[in-house]
Image (cartoon, rainbow over all chains, first blue to last red; front, top):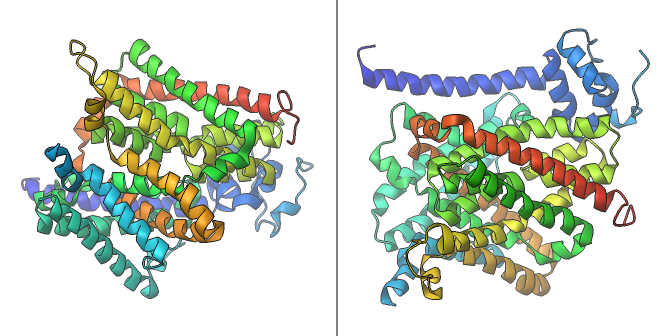
Length: 94
Length: 430
């Protein structure tokens, strides 16, 4: 681009657009629990305290998490149970 | 002597104390209250700043701006330019809190400081920071004032509540890790910057961003060094927050041991509570308590770093040992404000007003401190450029220092947590 001033302003605009995109991506990937990472994020963090039981029963141990990332993990229940603390703190039968 | 007296009205170090005295006095008398804290939102950013929030936000911008501008004017600096720059920086601070307040962003642990830095860096590295905006970017003044306010939050009564187990995990491991990282960085890695080494060491071992800010101010580090340390800390905090509870659960760690382990290692207080919560109520409580007692060390660490810098690092080896007066002249005075605020709130206000009233006062000062830190991070971003940041990373030494230091911290804290909370040195459950 010939006009360096304009180029810099466009870079700034692109930067702010990138920030908006990052937030949107997190919202879709984390908040809506899409994809293996999204499920883990939302199961663990977005739902806060009560989500721990969900994480360790639905996703299981670290080995299963890796399997999940490879696509061999079955999708978590949807919708998730309202009272996650009620879930037993042990793996569910497969 | 007259020049030292003049500094009382002319230096940012002293003004950080005066600003804090005015803010805290306002909070104690009830004149300062209801400082706006932006709400979280899901899909519409306007939910964070609705109509009801607008008036308090404008009042905060104007009130804080008037106070800071008064100080800048008395210091003899161009106050009109400062005020213009400050208002724009305040706008970026609002945007940073809005970004951090998005529900999923908040859940992932990407805090306001990261967004504030990003916005500042974006402007500085694209269109460039104009001079009038730079005049408002008084990052050190914002940071130091925020730190003096932080001092008020460090209550001695909290230390007594925790007992010996908490003290061992927080106060034995933390200095050990700082010394280890300092020696590893300066002697083994031969880091070119001693200030960067100590900032990374304290950020890793104490409590991330706040400790990094306090240490950077105490040893007069470059802003780029603080940016780098804060950026690294935040990225690793997110990883630790997810994987450490999973590991604790996997190996069947006792709740108290796991809580102490998380509290002693994860840098940000918010992340510690979130990670502890994943392991249940007991782990969450122990983790939060350990982090709290570790946070108390911020002031002590900043004090000793300032002293060490004046007496050893910055000292001309051929010059005679500096006198006490020289140490006093060069000592960053705002750290005294930090210590005095802690002593005053712990030993004067707490017995006088009671726990509930002090907690209400601190609720106000905490939110204001958050705003000041946010302003500081926007300002740091505006003063930094990517080239200088990249030059700090040459050879990857800062990352090696962080990873090695954090690994040592994780192992040593685990050992200490097991010894004191695992029923080895003290009865389990005590």
